[in-house]
Image (cartoon, rainbow, N blue to C red; front, side):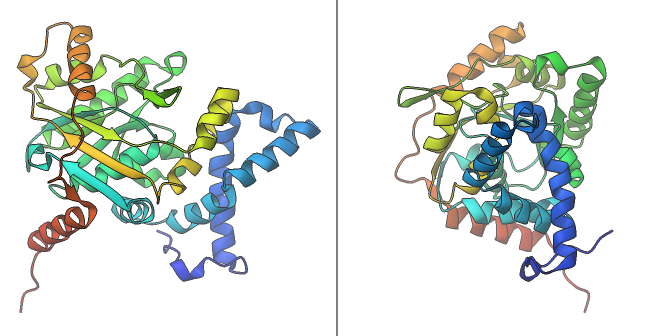
Length: 318
């Protein structure tokens, strides 16, 4: 296994760092090309547009971080990302997260990748066995995330029986081991309409999984927004929106995150039809209130996580 790059090695004259940076560029560029192929058409005005976009979206900064994180373990990457973006967090209802046993957190999806980073930090105050349903493309960038990511193909036209079976196999193994899952049933970011964000329709898979594996459901609502640039590019063309997602992680240091966690819902309480079950869960999540004055802050979350891990860490034999 390659030795991870140290933070201090992030220098353009450092050969190892530049090699890692080029390697990550070769992983990231194809994902951008798949989402906005016109940027790579070879036409002069498209090439110019790509250069301007990459500058606006701080792509060089993304590559620097990707090179730094390339060989780190998953939990360390998530810790660093949380430190990078989480400054203003308040959480209500942390006591509703079970300390052990299988469960499924069902959440809205306002910002994208940042939602998963934030909620991983929140859940780490209680337990360390979270898995997240996320686009399988992340494993093309950071393969070590297979310990965290249950790979999903959200795009209907690209789904296959084999991909669905892979997701269900991961789910079965994780829940049988007593892990807690996090799913964003919309599969896509909330859409801006005027000054408000509107959650997109939810897919019924979360309700189906909960009933199939008899997993209690934890409803959760996260309140946050993306940048004005994101919504501007989204209004121009969806391919422009899609290439902003990495930047929408890096720009969250000043973004307040408000998380409300509701009481557990037994799988047996869901309607038999998955479509009715997901409608019930969606309404429950979207109606969760704002965190109250007694909501815990990021410093408290971090302290809980550190103390819990210190207790769990085996002591050295004297």
